[in-house]
Image (cartoon, rainbow, N blue to C red; front, side, top):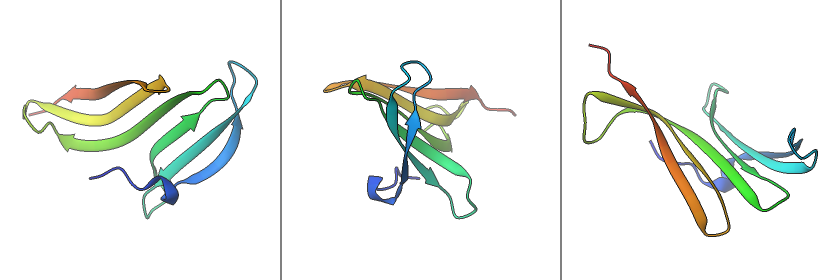
Length: 88
């Protein structure tokens, strides 16, 4: 699976519950309409992204990669995979 082109996301303004300001929210959906990922740009210049991966970990078959989250501002970006143990 790959992260889809940002141009293929559906965008809308969304009220940020923390600041009360508008944020730009982009969402990717699969052919059945299920959300696969989202990207939010906040008015303060920060962002948050989440994308479903749903694959066995490429280097540790005891783990399952559910999703990847990224957040930051400007060129400071943090990324974290959401890992689950594989059920045998």
